Image (cartoon, rainbow, N blue to C red; front, side, top):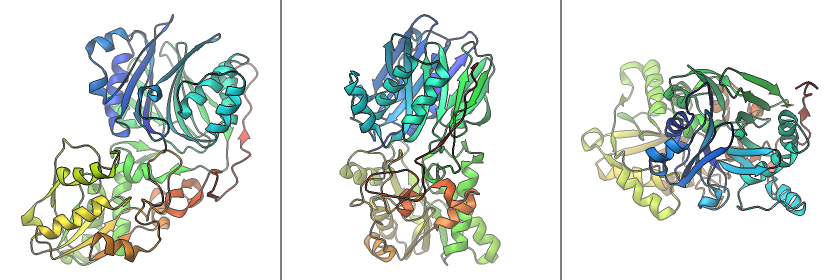
Length: 480
């Protein structure tokens, strides 16, 4: 299980940081629904509030008022590493001889157990089984001997895997992105300060301006008074490992990730899907909301290619917006029930028609199977399923809950078996090369482990497609 979360960090000139953190976490709620937390610093001490549940459930007005200070970090968690309890909720806090730390983590370390054992042997006591606490303890240890920049560099040299961090050391907020940039992190300018966030949608929510992505291997230090920020490129590697699935599924469509607007990328993936596997049908319809941008791009490409003979774009499924994401519900039974609670066919759109149904991905196959059944029960003569991502054949170790190989319907590698299992009249996925070309990146700069079985990190029992064991560590100026 991995850690798929949203993080935020704020440094302001005068006003309290708690409200911007709170609203920013609301904008990132789709990235985690199990717990939410904010830690602030008033220049003298930390103030923290961390609870299980959604952002609106975890905080009330009094909680926000008690979080004093103009700097703060926040976190929403979907627990894919560590226990599902408050012990693993974040931000994780620790006080030690050199000050205090609060740390929010999105991603997953692949050598956390090794580091935990080494630190425990040195006398560090752990209160959770999550890898976030491993990072916090390692950083705290390094801060006993080094300044902040060098301490972060030493931790980055030691931890291996995927991470985007917002950290608060006393009243200083910093952002760190792993050397291959697997998980997203960006920086924005507010009227009275700066913000770090997993997605630019959080910056938009705060009325800020997106400045840029935090670069892979970069440390960004926000000035405690909100007046600016400093940047240190601590580690450099030849290749990145950007997660393509952020663009396909997890990120909000209105977010900009690695210089690409997610909505435009999904439309581009849909257009490429038509080019690779377009089929004759009466109607093109999305699975709401995950397939909408893909279906729009697919339908536009079809119209451009064949004109009046192109299938009509229509909404054929009505979504109940009071049901959460089936992808991140904890049990299979809950996911199956949630599909019918969540989506209902519009009979007039599908009855007597051949339907092309567009979705972003197939993981376990539960949703796809029930949707095909729903449409056929509503009178569809045929259902052609088109997927805006390649077959998911392997687990994700970097931060998205892809389940085990036994649970992945496409893990066997035969798309015809999948088509029969979900009872679609035809099934086609987007190619891996198609994804890379639409994203404008080489396959060597993407993390494609879940669709190729080859990972950009050294993972026990899995194949690595490039050597990442010896990163180049950038020099840190002596006067920093």
